[in-house]
Length: 111
Image (cartoon, rainbow, N blue to C red):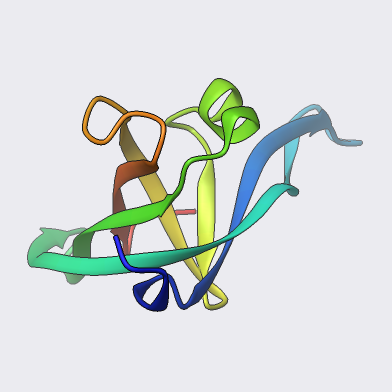
């Protein structure tokens, strides 16, 4: 992949839960990695939930291979692509092993 396509700033974040004062959990997102990437939007979808239309968009995110990220990333992480939250659905490292990481991401789901 040409380096010029990797123009978007991507921050990878892990979810951390901590107990709150009323017996529940508080969710906080912690930055883990920051890389340049390329998002290729693939398709959109609309679903009816609780009487309201919910829209979501899928895409493929490509970043340069980083051994720390490859070893750490999980599907319950999210990423901020140019400041917009995307949920990581799947990580695929089988193609172009050692050069890039590709992952399916979804926008418009509960974060």
